[in-house]
Image 1 (cartoon, rainbow, N blue to C red):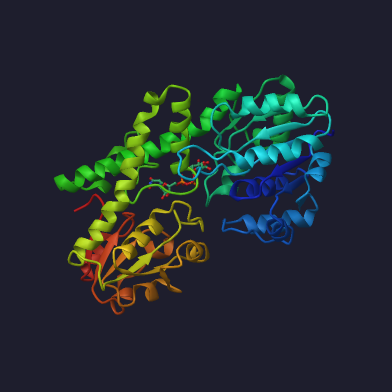
Image 2: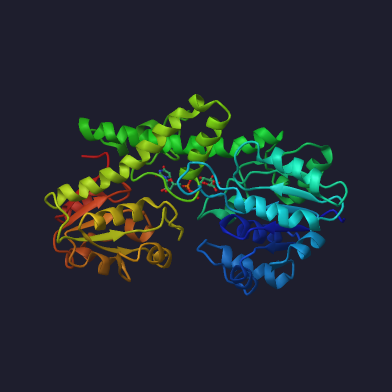
Length: 440
Ligand code: UGA
C-alpha cells in the first residue's frame, strides 16, 4: 500500500455518494459500490440521483480524473480497497422505533468474503450502540483474509451542505481497537486532518454514541424552542424575538433554535426513536425518556399548523383550496423522508381540502409518495384560487417572494408561515392575513 490507501464506499445514497466523490476530490482512488444497478449506472455517467448542491460538478470532475468509479461488484470492491467505508442506510423499522439493520448487515456480509489481507472496514452508518462490537466479532469469525479489522467513524454531514461538511468537517471521530486501525484511518483522512481538523480517537461504544447523541441534542434544541412557541401562543409572546434574545447568550447560541414546523428528514426523527429503542433494550430507557417528549413536541407542531390553517378559513377545509409552498423536509434538498411539509399537506387533503403543492426540487419524490395531492409547476400556480397559502419549507425563492406576485391569483389573501421565515410586516402591508407558529 502507498501512503494513500485505496478506498471503497459501500452504499451510494446521500451519505455514500457524497463521501465517495469528496474522497476522490481529496486525491484518493475511490470505488463506489451499490447493489442498485441504476444508481451505479447514473453515477458512472456523471448523474447524481438526488439533489445536492455542488455534488454533480464534483462527481463529473472526479470521474474525468479517473480516480473515481462505481460498481455493483463486491468482489471488485474487496480486491480494490485497503479501507472500506460502510455508508448504507439504517431507516426506522416499519411499525417499530428501532433501526432496520438489514442493509448494514447485508453490505457487511457481501463484502467480508472478498476482503484482502490487512483491510480495514469502517462503519459510517448511524447504528444502535453495540453494532460495531457485533460486526467486529463477526469479522473475526468469518473473514478468510488475515489482519482485517473494523473501525467506526460516524458521519455528521447535513443534506444541502454535504460537500462542504465532508471536505471541511467540524471534527472527525475514530472509534478504533488498535493503533494500526487508527493509523489507517489517519491515512484515509490525511488531507482533512491537515486543515487542521480536530480528531477524537475513542472506543467503539463512544464513537457510535457520538452520532446519536449529536442528533438527539439537535432535535432537543429544536423541540425546546418549539415548546416555547407553544407557550408564546397562549401568552401573546413572539418566539422569533425570544429565540433571537436567547441566541445572544453564547452558551445557548442561535443555531438550531428556529421555531416552526419542526424537524423531519431521514435522520433526526428516526435517530431519536432508534436511540430510545436501544436504551430500552439496554435497561436505561429512563435516561432517554425526555426524547419521547422531544418527538411529541415536534409532531404537535404539524397538528398545530393544520389547526391554524383551518381556523383561518372558517373552521372547515371542505371545498377549500390550499396552496402549499414546499415539500422537502428542508430547503436545498429533494428529500421528503418524514417531511413536515408533506405531512401537513396530506393531512389537510385528508380533512377535505384541495391541496396543490409546489417545491423547487422535491416534486418527483413527493408525487411518488403522495399521488393524491395536486402539483403545480411554480409557486404562483400552486397559490391559484387558494383560500389559504401554507409556507412549509423555507426555500430562498419563497423567502424572497413578493406578496404582490401571489395576490392577483389567490381567492383570499391568507398565508400561514410554517417556518417563521417571511416578513410579517411586508405581507400585512400588502393586505394579507399573516399567521405563524409561536407569534401573534
Ligand atoms: C442532520 C444533522 O444536522 C447532521 O449533522 C447529521 O449528520 C444528519 O442529520 C445525519 O444524521 O445524517 P439533516 O437531516 O441533513 O442533518 O438536516 P438538518 O439540517 O439537521 O435539519 C433537520 C430538520 O430540522 C429539518 O427538517 C429542518 O427544517 C429542521 N430544523 C433545523 C428546524 O426546524 N429548526 C432549526 O433551527 C434547524
